[in-house]
Image 1: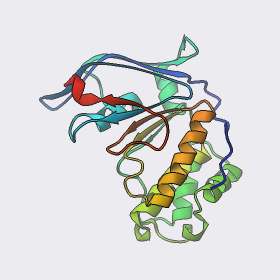
Image 2: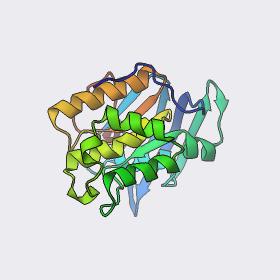
Image 3: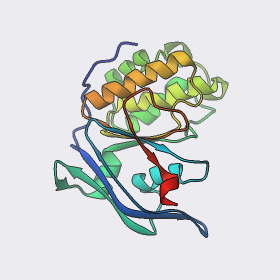
Image 4: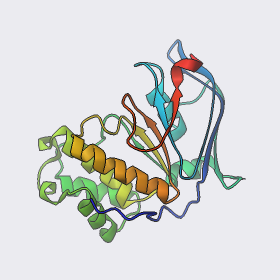
Length: 218
């Protein structure tokens, strides 16, 4: 895979994510409490813990889909506090365990729709297609793609519309060994360009990453 080192990220300069004293619950059950985490440009954190520990919920809280019981989630540009709504709207990507793709659409149409929604132009989409080797898949319905092919299609929007913070939920789960390495290279290039990665994982990431066991905050 040909990946440009230090590829340009979005115009929003989100350089730091700061989580302080965070507590999350699901229904009546508290997932974790008093969790604090700092993540800066060029860094990755791997969230670990048993199923149900709150890894996915933490990613969704950072993205703004879950309201914390307590604590704060702050986005910063070299010490300057950013508006959380703007940071979430234009400064991050959330790639969930479910890919969020429309099965009835052609893969090319689905990627084009998502990329345009995120502000990418045609040239950026073409680069994403080339990077993830998607050209042979574009005329197929999404529902006919394998799980690994669907994951590559979902990842393409991160390439087409660069944003500083990647929130990744089990990003390698459906990928074979070749594509795990290729996506690892993509993640490293993102960090080299000043990006940040917060990933929920069961297996170690193929990039330098600081581990954070959510079980320690239960």
